[in-house]
Length: 85
Image 1 (spheres, one colour):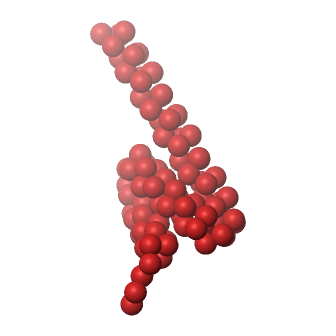
Image 2 (cartoon, rainbow, N blue to C red):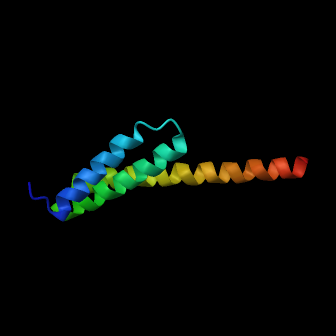
Image 3 (tube, rainbow, N blue to C red):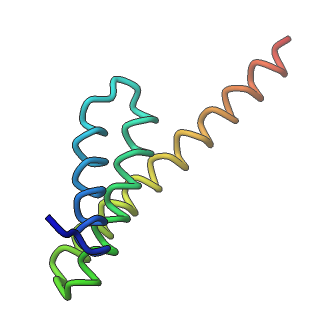
C-alpha cells in the first residue's frame, strides 16, 4: 500500500479526533481535537472538499474559543486566590 502525503494527513486527522474522544481531561480533549480538526481542514483543502474544510474549521475555532475561555477563567481564579492570601 503506497500512501501519499494527503492520505497520511487524512489518517492522522482521523486518529487525532478519535484519540481526543478518549480523553477524560476536557483541556486535553480540546487540544487534541483541535489538532485533528486542523489536520482535517488541511486535508479538505488538499482534496477540494469544502464541507470538510468549513465544518472542521468551525470546530477548530470552537475549540480555540473554549480553550481561551478556560485559560482566562484559570487566570481570574488565580488572581482571586492571590488577593485573598
